[in-house]
Length: 192
Image 1 (cartoon, rainbow, N blue to C red):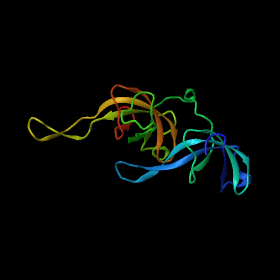
Image 2 (image 1 turned 30 degrees about the vertical axis):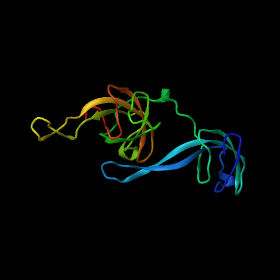
Image 3 (image 1 turned 60 degrees about the vertical axis):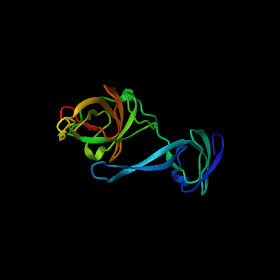
Image 4 (image 1 turned 45 degrees about the horizontal axis):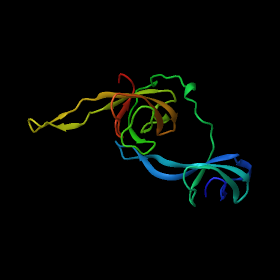
């Protein structure tokens, strides 16, 4: 289905129905790169639908679509847009260190004003408005002269602000980047 089409959905109790829903498609799991533990699952945004009639099945009308709606897609209650002007940037209340585990938009190099997914969330002490440093390096590298190896130091590569937290992951907006950022770059509390 696409914008203007009717869709029929099971599992929306008439008494708990919302007026509108986001249509999402289950995606890949988000895993902690340090422990390989599943932190959650990506939900690919498909579009938005409004409830026309409750019941089993409920009838909804697709109002907007970025991708074609398909059998197996899921619905989430439509929430209000987040205004970034409502945040008060601050350092996290406790030390936090994690990794960038995904970037929205499917790019490989991350830059200013892009949204990233972090391997830490509210259970780790993150809150909306927390500011984190983005660090690169910290891995073993081969010394091309001596043939040995050395530990590459962590260096600051940018700054992000957390704008939406979930229990085990969070979303952050890259506020500043002095070089191309990548998935698996480290994020941490300032001056950690």
